[in-house]
Length: 311
Picture 1: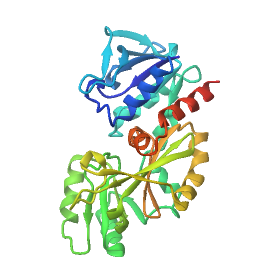
Picture 2: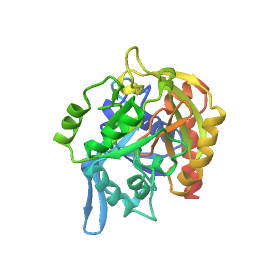
Picture 3: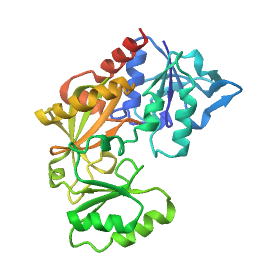
Picture 4: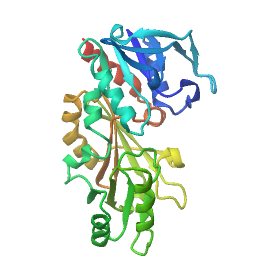
């Protein structure tokens, strides 16, 4: 097959951690042709969806993970699969990408399905499952956020469309910084904020469960660094081996059929204790860590799901 990856610069990836690199590596091992382009090189031109990029051969060499050909323009309708793998933030640039890629249907399979990526932001899809999630509020109004904090005391405040743990604050019952943080966030963004009741179980880890076409493939545990609330690996969280428990399987059984129906082939959900906190569909990570811990070739499972959809 001809496979295009819309992603951030391939030269900067960590070959031992990056999920996009691992997906490209597995595709190459299966005999598929690879093409790389950045999201800024995607375009609509008189009825065609085009990209300016380079043919790509990946290799497991730290600091030099890919051999790239000359820059050329392609018609993405000529490809079998396009991977939407650029990192958030989930802003208007990202949303525009989903609109353009959506025009490739039905001839080209875009993974994950861009229509539903646009309608399933990480922190919003969970609102469909209030019985699975901690108490949550989404608001731009400070009085609403203050009232939520008064009800729950110890809370997490974060940008609604953030990623990688950036801008995540814990405000306990003694904290006096809510007003200042509100001014900071609303001073540079018109987006609402999301607040959730703090879950003490996060000290034991924030579990990332990988789902492939709606079915759980396994999980890793991300443990916060000493003195840190956030468990994201971008900010020092430590990945650990962990299995799926009964609650994890219950959560996956609830959300899996919807993800499969809506073309979300590769999804990473976050579970703290008994609670679902995020459903990551834009550019989930974690498959290399899971492969090392459990010896499960998750990338192969993902490609098998894609090949099944194309068949």
